[in-house]
Length: 457
Figure 1 (cartoon, rainbow, N blue to C red):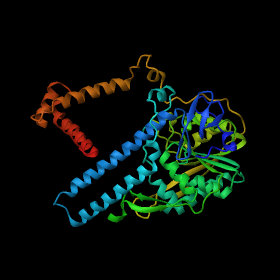
Figure 2 (cartoon, rainbow, N blue to C red; figure 1 turned 90 degrees about the vertical axis):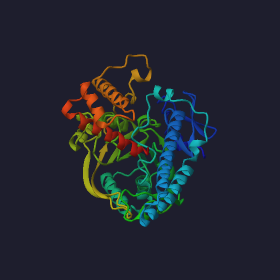
Figure 3 (cartoon, rainbow, N blue to C red; figure 1 turned 180 degrees about the horizontal axis):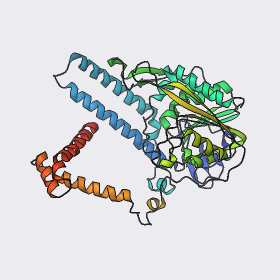
Figure 4 (cartoon, rainbow, N blue to C red; figure 1 turned 60 degrees about the vertical axis):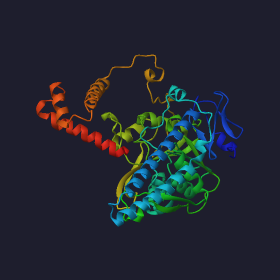
């Protein structure tokens, strides 16, 4: 790894203590206040607040992904041993074995650096700092985006760049940060178009950032695409060459870390872009907007781009476009200029599945400094420290009852009782009304069987 340049190092502040400037020690970044070294992943700074614990968790997610791929291969090979297959089905399954085997090797090679470290701590310190990787974001959650970004997605990539450029209007980026950069194409396109003094693509997924970093320098990577609905049997696991139109200059940088514990000092960027991000982060939008404000220089510009499909379960946080504008306005920005446009979305030439997405882009210029916000806490104190009483919420009560009922029903499965036998016992115990018992137990057993098939047993 080449140590970060003086220009890059000057932007950084420790994501752990949130204040100490970063230094370089043995080619790794280092916080003299926390006495913590931040390693690199294939030459990319690994800037999580708990670097060792996050490394361990990503390694676990990598190993889980490989296990899932192996499970899929085992099921296909078991099916191929059957003689009762159509010739076309056998050909398709044999093609899947080749494709998934190659895919597994590709992923293993890309993430090999995760397996090289052994001096990793447990999860306790990770939780103590209230940092946590999103549980719904697996290693391969956005894997198909790399093919859109670097192979067949020119139309969508161009439409995205055009909308963001329209939002930027006369603003000319000089120091640009893209949060949630994903597979990296929008970061690359903005950097190539505007030629800022420096651009940073920042994301928490090492697979996506690793691919973006290599391809943007001019490297060609061969990977397998797995469309949602392949047009033909041979379109499943089709081999793709990922490549950039041309190599970016050395002012385009990539980093891996958590957007809730960003490793940057305040007021370091004149442009921040958040593509397809604000509606999936768990932090409340007003707090997140304040963090953006703190990173921007005076009259800096925040460009948000993507969907407004907030997944927060609280109804007050499922914001509309008008609410977003009001929150941004209250977070130290001038009223944002908002534009919407329909663009193609994941329109792979090998898939029957594609859609048109109406996306939103806003440009909000900073006009006031906002008081520094408190750290984002992914977990409550009673769960982190383990000393306070665990609150007995309605959700806990409901889950307790459900678990007890499920445990009792499962205890009745002994290889001898029928569905009707179990239903009679459940009705006698007044777990379900007698006239609904058989249908209820059948639905319970169907769900259990479906889950077993999904998991491969």
